[in-house]
Structures are given as C-alpha cells and as structure tokens.
Length: 137
Ligand code: NI
Image 1 (tube, rainbow, N blue to C red):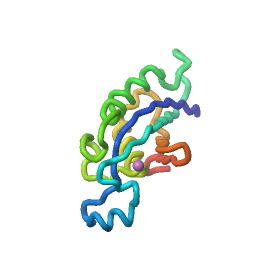
Image 2: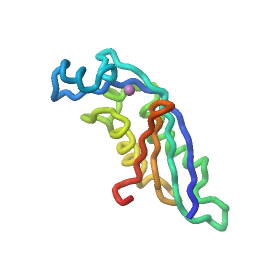
Image 3: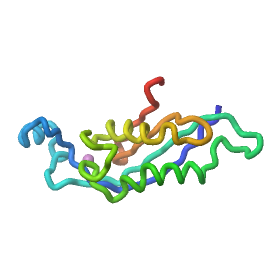
C-alpha cells in the first residue's frame, strides 16, 4: 500500500462560539478564541490517499487530479472566508480544528477518483494540528 499526500493552504477567519451559551460563558470557555470580532489562521491542509500503484501510470492517484478535487471542494469554499458564516458545510458547527477536519473528510470522501481517502491533517498553527482517519480507523 502506498500513501500519497497533497498539501494545500488556505486563510480563514473564525470565532469559537457556542450559541447555546452566553457571551460570558463563551469567553470563559474559549478565551481569546471567542473574540466577537473574529481572528484568523493560515491553515495547512494535508490530504493522504492510499492505494496500489496503477501499472499503466505508475501512480496511485494523479496529483494534478487530487489537487483539483481539493481546490474545488475545500479551498474555494474556505479560503478568505468566515468559517462561522460563509461555509455551507460548516453551518451549525463550532469551527474548531476537530470539527473542521471531520467536515473536510466528509466533503472529500467519495470524490477521490483513484485510491482511497486515508487521512486528513489540518494544521491550525505551527504547534497544533488535527488528524482524522474516518470512523473505521
Ligand atoms: Ni482560532
């Protein structure tokens, strides 16, 4: 089994905020991350696809194709957006790294043309990243 990774970057604003809680409770729970006027991150996304090598191409998946799939389904929807307000597939979710990485997986699963989606890694800062491998792993 071979693992192929495509890296993409996007910048987005968000606020960690649970509408079921008061502003005071949100502030206590999330601190600076709940700033009402938003804050931003330069996210780094890694998408890992696993599979066998195709004897015709020598590829697991054509990386140009993987790049296109990630850009169309994720980057165009998230880059320079407000994750709380602008993104259809994040509606009703607190835009934490954990929720983001699962939502990105759900957007990409089923759209990978060759091989199988293995993992999504999302770096929110240099020191913090989130990884999801689906429900089976
Ligand atoms: Ni943040």
